[in-house]
Length: 237
Length: 300
Ligand SMILES: Nc1ncnc2c1ncn2[C@@H]1O[C@H](COP(=O)(O)OP(=O)(O)OP(=O)(O)O)[C@@H](O)[C@H]1O
Ligand SMILES: [Mg+2]
Image 1 (cartoon, rainbow over the protein chains, first blue to last red):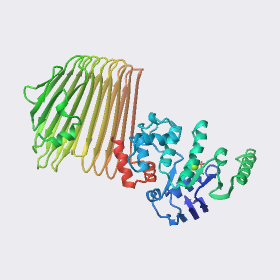
Image 2 (image 1 turned 135 degrees about the vertical axis):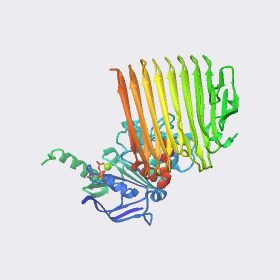
Image 3 (image 1 turned 120 degrees about the vertical axis):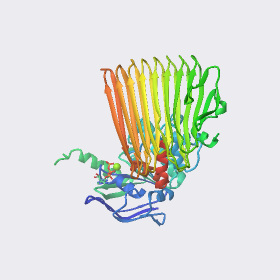
Image 4 (image 1 turned 90 degrees about the vertical axis):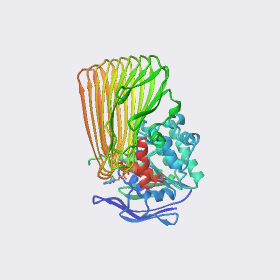
């Protein structure tokens, strides 16, 4: 279980996250959604340890991880696919997967992981993880590094961004499988109705606050209604 | 012969190559020729002439230099004549072991003459160990006739106090020159590299990639001057990671003398990107393991 207690994040006198209280259970699929800039990525970074909360506590499976480093959290089974994948000059796709798995792997094992994210592995395994890869390819590799870790808590920040429709369907089944296999928590940040649709719980974030949490049925109504209402509002008013 | 040093500068099995010449402490100590590749010592002993016959296919030549006498200072002239259509790999390299008080210096002046349609891959490694001062000042001159191509790979990972590397090339029609440089300096070392490439021929092209890491108090300077005198292409990429109190200077110069010359220079100097460290840490590495992995990959 992951528990956030009164977690706040302040930057430049701005409250990016404001007293977030959240409990996430095993074998559940959570989706965080909300407007751009509402604090979704910041929340994910706080859970991974990339940002330190200005206030509050984070408890993961009974351990207070508030002051634990990124590395320590990774070793406890938390894993995070970045919204913007990182480029590495000189590290190949294979290198990254091997680091993720933390033991020597065969090319075949690396290929198997890549094919989960819909990549024809042999063409990619020795490629450098740099900008000669397309945006969608980088995104899939990013997702693959998290899948490779078999995490207890897998966080994906807008995994669908840049991924084509066909692969998107497969991705959804990969997420479901991952959750089942690892008996872990899956936390996906997304704006996509299709991903919202497979959520056990949807968390709506607005202005750094949790506006509402609930089951898919209740939340989809609220969120979709809101979208249609907002289309008529002039943003500059 | 010092086998340990040899292993640090030559990757292949010297006994199995087509031709070789081992220079140790200022003298040739072992050599081998074959019908296609002829290595002839210069009259004054300060170097060799290597003749590769026309149409030689996949020849391999090793010409390592080893210095273990502290205080030895030498200037060595090696000339390579590569015949038409020949295809050859030349593995060079110099290792200095110096535990003495005096500085050891190896200045290698290498001149390449590539005849039409010949292909050369030239690999050069610098290696140094011991507490005494070690210096290398290589000069490489490359003359490329029509249709020839050359790949030059150089690496110097720590161990050398001072280096000034000068590389000059003249490219005629339809030639391609690819240079990959790897460099890591630490403590108070300094390394300067200077490329001067003239793209004189129609469709001449060159690709220079320099990747370097400067740590501690070391200093590096990367200078390149590419001149496009014809319809030609050049891409120069200088990438440096700095750490600690190190400094790196990049001086790019590209000069297009022809409306169809297309010359690109990219230079990036900076510390390791925070996002790279964070990503690897999120995969379970400690911050120092992450740093090591990034540097190792960068210089691979
Ligand atoms: N280091 C920082 N310093 C100042 N402001 C920051 C910092 N990091 C994030 N912010 C701000 O905090 C807010 C939340 O950012 P965050 O990236 O968490 O949003 P998000 O919900 O993930 O948005 P998106 O849907 O666009 O990805 C934004 O207004 C952003 O500009
Ligand atoms: Mg975001």
